[in-house]
Length: 73
Image (cartoon, rainbow, N blue to C red; front, side, top):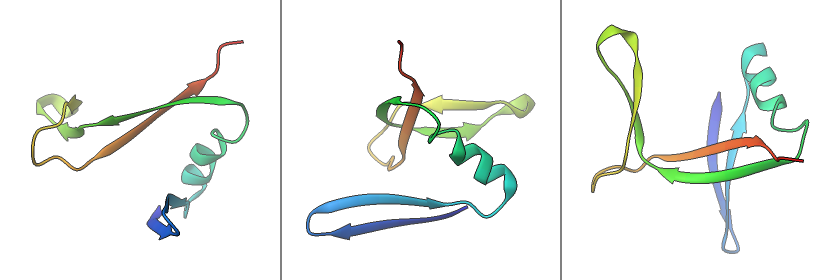
C-alpha cells in the first residue's frame, strides 16, 4: 500500500493507494456504505504468541488510528 499525506490550503489529506488485490478489496469496503469514523492516537505492537496489541499513546507516539464501522440504521 502506498501512503501519502497531502497538504494544501490548510486541508490535510491522508491518501492510501492499494497495490495488491487484498488491499483493493480492503479499501473497497470503505466505499460500499455510509460509515461512522473515530480517530484515536496510539500504536499497535507485536507480542509473544503472535498477537498484536493496541497501546494508548505516550509522549513519543505519533500513530493515528482510524476506526470505521457501518452506521446503525
